[in-house]
Image (spheres, rainbow, N blue to C red):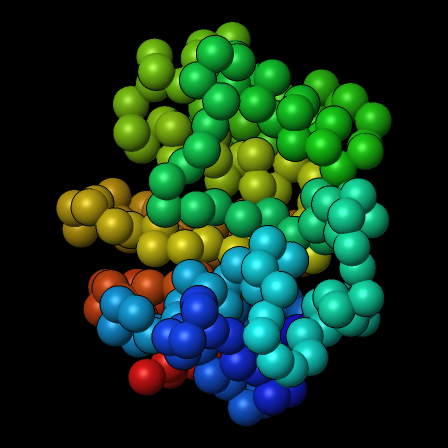
Length: 209
């Protein structure tokens, strides 16, 4: 599902990530661990095709990312990868339902309101479809961000520090929701975190220095 070889990335002259080899099978659940600055977020951005690495080869679901450019890369990302960023990046002036419609549109997929409503209901926010993000609680916004990430049935679900600034109960719920949605979709789940509460929930772990 994921194959990484000789991966390295630099921001200017500063090294940000180095990973000799890493393989992940479809459906596995991985925690990417390490202190701040170890390259966790950079790795997730590379896997999503948002950052092109300085060196190395990255393959996701049989597709070499180095071969994709422009609109082709955008379509591949929209159809293959779901990502929940630490800053949720929901569109404030759009309704919850329209935020998910936008995800379908950007992936060049047909609008499917039945799929949207089913996804929202599975995350306990089916009754919030016509609300806008500023009208929701932080927990509800996080559920909507997860819904947006999985609405296109991605093969790979990525989450960057999903428990940052959450109390113990909310942190456990966030990880449980991600795990449940990945299982529901048959997706591979990769969570980047330095949170010990999250680490304990994952058997497969990648440690970055």
